[in-house]
Length: 321
Image 1 (cartoon, rainbow, N blue to C red):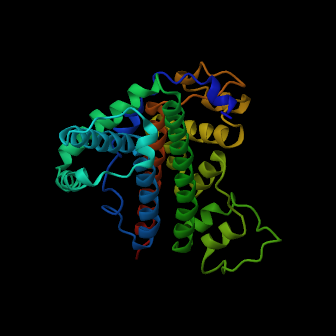
Image 2 (image 1 turned 60 degrees about the horizontal axis):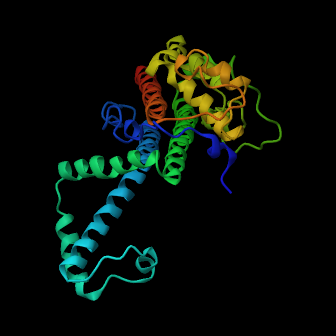
Image 3 (image 1 turned 60 degrees about the vertical axis):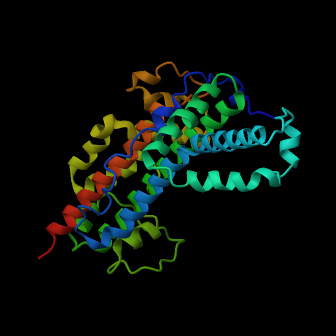
């Protein structure tokens, strides 16, 4: 049975292309300017997580393009061999590709594999994305699928950012000369007594703090507080300034999707109050995403995460003798 949320969502105008065509900011950034080798794994993982999420956003368009392409070839070859095209979907479901067209179909596929990237991208946009966008208003299943893609991108973008700030903290403090450790004493909690640590607090303070839950990176207020203490007040300002502060929008939407079945509550309304583009969302109503604001949330996680890495890199380089 269709979730009641999806029964009431206004799908028209989803702006799928705004997300699908949205370029990943600073492509190739990940290791270009990072001097601290200890940050390599953290940076590569963060970069891969967000590239994977962006690639997933293209999945509906790729499926549409491949389905259109294959059906076009089958229809063309069917007519070419003198057979008729049937509208009976059941026949397509139970009948393998006829032997009399299989060889030529394989030849078409082989030739298609050599299509240049520019042409492939044009086909993906015109046929794949075009089909998805034109189907939103006429095919409810496609519209629901696109909404689920938007929600998945929001959830995974936040997860990638949350993982980054946790792992970056570990590496920063584990490789610190004591300077950052001294700054954060006043903001970290006491170690949880029920957790038996496997890390030595003196040799791996960052790992120890995360393991014993002295620092937990699940709430935005805590993340800002920890990093402002570790890397200076300029860090806290980044959360509000980078990509128009859309990391706060990402945090709000991710929480309401994960914990409120996608329906706005008072906390959500308070968190998005500074952003007038969401002013029409009322309490207890389902939140509605589109490709444009989903892309902005994803980009906020990417750009802010990278800036935090750059600050950590600068701090570690400054500590070098």
